[in-house]
Length: 459
Image 1 (cartoon, rainbow, N blue to C red):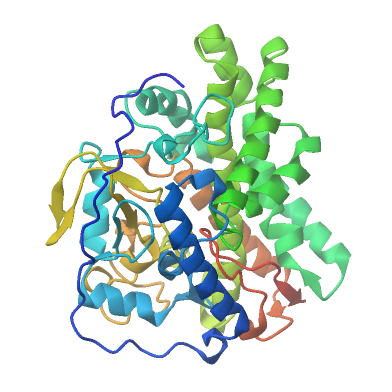
Image 2: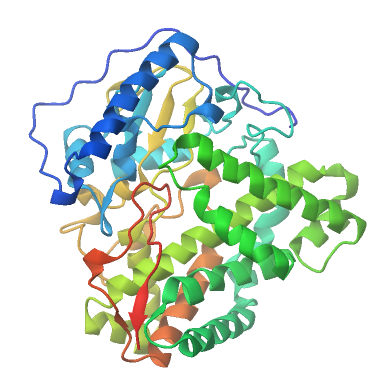
């Protein structure tokens, strides 16, 4: 990849002592989270991993087990972050995790602190390549995309796609999205009750929309659906997730190569006609990879989980079905805040020694911003932040899409899809209900994008 404004940092050879938390008893977890044989085995493997890293150093591409301390921001109890995350935020909004790496990892959970980190592109770099032993072009380390790219390359790449995702441009796609929603609701009805809303609607609507916008062929959709979920699954550690990233980017590299010979009508073809050889296949594939992933998995999870949340209260269903456009906007923004399905922002790497809310951060340290914890911070969200309230204020400031230069470029597309699919769903199926108790849904156990594996519904 071309050289970037902020080069990869050298990893420090000395660890800082972990930040001490004030003495505080953490709230008990739900019974299903007690340490059984698998959890104990995971703890043993974590200790073995620590010894290996201390002996040989870290190669992120080979990391097949996520250290236990690093799992905290990924754990959920249904739609809620686990109580331990709130306890850590209350004790210290910036907390150093006890992980067996040769550098510090700091978990940021306070709203103001997360917003500060995400807005600062000078003190932090998003380039992850220094954490891989093999960081050459075409390797798993060459992940590309906007999320792992620093200015000025990030600025140039984002400028190629940002005009397509303004609210005005996105609204021009509304008729196409409405047609997609109608088609997928027809398929749900044809499947018969009970049926899986996630399979027939939640996954398909955003994938159809983003692939249509980009000009991707229908034959690629199923592969993107499968890999889109795998790349955020942390149960197999970082290695498995980056394996899915590499596989999807390989598919997209082939797509770009085909369209370079015969540009299609979508965004990929328009970029190729405008840029020509100025943008290499691999660079464009990385850019498209980020758009496909950001435009699919996060919206799909929000549709499924949002449906489950609204079904808790008939008044909220009625608001989604019959409310004014202003009511619907507020409801969607509160769903985004309440769910914040993207649990952790792309990792930031400190480019200099600094202090963040009293916590020393050294050059090369990782700063992990917990978006789900920040959006439940009572200092910003107000009273009862763990309750869904469509009339809450100030939800427009939520961090579900991130913040700063790396804020999700497809935020307006996701909003529009939610504003279309939720009213249409409840109008088409006024007696829609979960087919199983919410607690029995197949929740994802450890994923960077929270969700359910299926959403069985009756109608």
